Amino acid sequence: MAATTPMAPTRTTAKRTRPPIVDCDIHNAVWPGALDAYLPKRWRRHGALFGSRTHQGSLYPKGSPAAARHDAWPPSGRPAGGDLDFMRQQLLDAEGISYGILNCLSAAGTQLNADYSAALSRAVNEWQIVEWLDKEPRLRAGVAIPYEDADLAVTEIDRFADHPGFVQVLLVARSAEPLGRRKYWKIYEAAERHGLPVGIHFGGGTRGVPVTASGWPSYYIEDHTDMAQAFQAHVVSLVCEGVFERFPRLRVVLIEGGFAWLPPLMWRLDKHWRRLKEEVPHLKRAPSEYIRDHMWVTTQPIEEPHDPRHILQVFDHLGGTDRVMFSTDYPHWDYDDPDRAFRVRLPEEDRQKIFAGNAKALYGLA
Image (cartoon, rainbow, N blue to C red; front, top):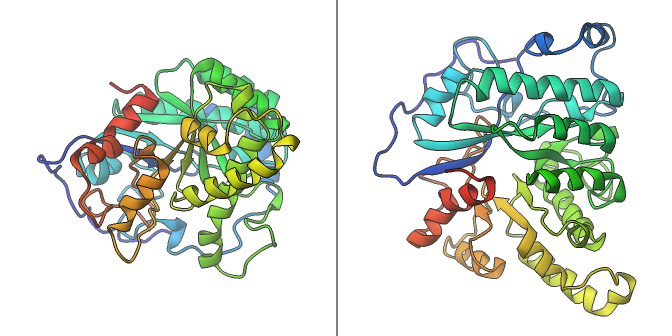
């Protein structure tokens, strides 16, 4: 349950000396009844009678209710992230956000009933237009799709891709299969055709897939930490299945999965490719080259070495900071304040790229 007496925002005015910021991971929450106006009567009735049908919900108590900051519950009574005015006051205005990318983590894409999943996805997208994008010019969003049914997913991408407020296609890390598999290729074809990046976000839960290769962990701390495993599996799958050879203009963003693990994964994958390349003749280049050319990462949750300077070495191993983009993960409990996200002073050129330039270039923001 939400806190009954929300705390006031910690800051209400932007810091004028700070350079522009593009926040690549903001969560807008669907409040009860929010989608009713956008769902056909048949699906409203379905939801009322049968409810949500995902095979596996969350098994772990979150670090805080709804995984939200304790001060992020708006006075309106809506869930954290569900009140645009409060989001303006607490994040967009207070932190001087030039643009924010909304990643709505609703249950739309996880439904076992594919038609219901498609109806919910469409409703979420229409709701985002009316309640968020039309009302706040700083906001952009990811297209919600029923990602386990590629044909239905493509219908939603084609329906909303031309709206200027949508700047990527949204997937989740805990999918039914590794995301390089052919069942998802139509999604990538549609994203490439429309010039939209594909964002893969922490979370999901389709068909009860565990986050580890060894089954379900015992604790939330394990689940939260182990999510990087899912991201690694998708990176390897996308490369080895030849997705980037088939879709050479496809761009993928790894959202809220960390990134310090990426350089050693590239090294390991390159080593095995040199020995096993005959198995994957469709790969024309070393796996690390596909990763560097086609994948971006967001900063939250940034790995924090004991020696803060070592994060600069991670950037070097990544090949630079051209693919790194800042995110807060608002309104979640592990939110990153722009002033405290890096415990080491970044070179000014890198800082400008990470906090705004890279995201503006990727998402076509002025």
